[in-house]
Image (spheres, rainbow, N blue to C red):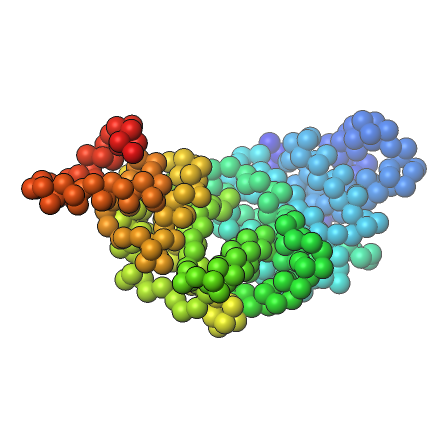
Length: 379
């Protein structure tokens, strides 16, 4: 660990005049076979000259190599890039963000800052800006990482950064093109992209918006043929805590009152933590309720997601009044039953009630949930 206060002359010194930097320039030049007088050799030296000397001597050799070679690749072709580096004492995260200079503005800087602060436990300590004479700008953010578990995955944040700088409509179109033909993706994006409010865009991103558009369009198509007006989707964000799941409920028209939604989800065994409502074009194109939930006690979110399809079907049937809302729905999660199988268990219980069985519904459900293998064998 190198510690100390650098003089202004030291910070502005040529890399060749700083022993540690000179050794690292020579090592990278030798490893990649750069000729010192070649274009790539000069680009590498320029990166070492531009980046803060006091940080470069503190970073590990692999981190220094990753940082400088990334910057030298951007000089001739500026484009959005992000590098995250953990400090030697693991107290701070240094985030280096490059972007074309004509994209730089206070608003963009604040949006990038908000993107980085989604890292769980991160806190902004400082930021700086370096604008070169060419077409490249570099932002450096210093984050307090003492409350974070580890350096987050930079690739995910970089994809969100590209979406941010590319423009929302183009980003949604690109995400839709993974499942839709090119011309169709353009038409769908033109209809739906601008309907998402800014609060949604900053929280979920274009890829998630594309998933929501696909669900809303499919729901609208079904609503034209049936009375189905609601659908559900289980998922997780990369930034979510390990014990958290998310559930989106879609509406083609109207909204779902919390006093209706929370008891229904609790009957599936979920614990409801938070909820956010997104109205597309003031609800004209649909409404999305995003719930943060926890699985039943001791449940693993990954296990629940493995059975997402049957669970989503069961929730949607209850939301559309196609299935009953009672404690038997817990068996969809606890005993891995389908909505139809849960209906059979409900029917058997009510038949037994007519024969004089006095057990309450909660006692029966607890017993069935406590012996899932026996429960599944009964169907």
